[in-house]
Image (tube, rainbow, N blue to C red; front, side, top):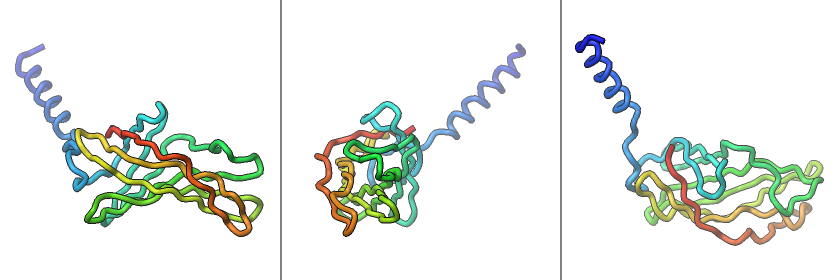
Length: 152
């Protein structure tokens, strides 16, 4: 291969690599949009969408029926709604449950505790299936846990 062609190919590879890299996340004040992989389970990937200080987070994996949910209950995937506040990033994780035509939305708190080295650290718990549907009666959420999400 000619030296000039080889140099051009190397330069092109360097430019392509440089252009595809995002700035690393070093602060929770930075944009966090994009895909993230959880350390909670090998297949858990989440997509963060960010608009005007609000973060919507959706699972990129089959988010099926949680433990404690019976076969007569339809279960929607979880969604996480967060907002930036002066004291940090906080919000709720929600899951919609339905029995017959009756809907019940279970919620549990979520807090982002750290954003550094392309890793988000969150404290959260999964919403439990409702204790009752008519009226919608919340069950106590599972115990909270810490998760680390790595930017992809």
